Image (cartoon, rainbow over all chains, first blue to last red; front, top):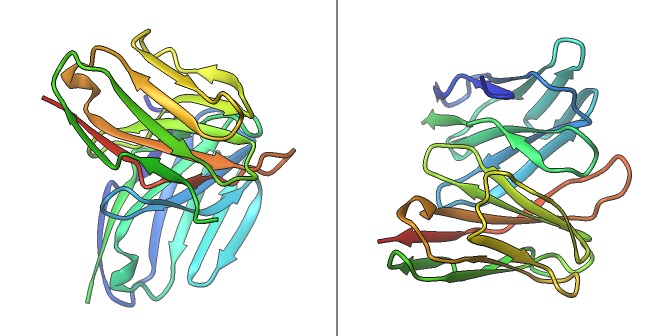
Length: 109
Length: 115
């Protein structure tokens, strides 16, 4: 079993829909990261969080430390949101990240 | 500063050849990480540096892989006697690490194809 599990693996939505991607982890962490990867490889860091909730534009990330679970929400989805969304955790501050396998999101117009 | 730069972006080589990738991090960043990603998978940790010191190396790395960051700035990742299983995207990331904060900036990656 992977230390970081994401669901779903693939997600197709219509423009405007509310989207949720889930991440569960099995180890103690110092921080959880959400990242976005577009075709061609470029990875962009969206959020780093260790508790509670963060919001940036239409993106919201939440984490429940007790349940070892995090969610990434996208409100009013748009085709340009189509990408792979990856959850990753670091067990100690500044150490290596352990990545989930990613969720491929496709938003259709 | 234009972010994290990786070179070359694409490398095609024959099995048994040596290859070297270079990563230029954001100049003030003290930590530099190497990851490897195969199609459909999340990135996999290889090694990371704080300044010039290599702090951790994955047990997945064979002794054919070596990484350096000699002056605490750019880093190189060398793969000796390449095998077809080494074909992957090699990602570099850097961060300004201080207690409680470590947001990574990734390069665009170097794609290796071993024939």
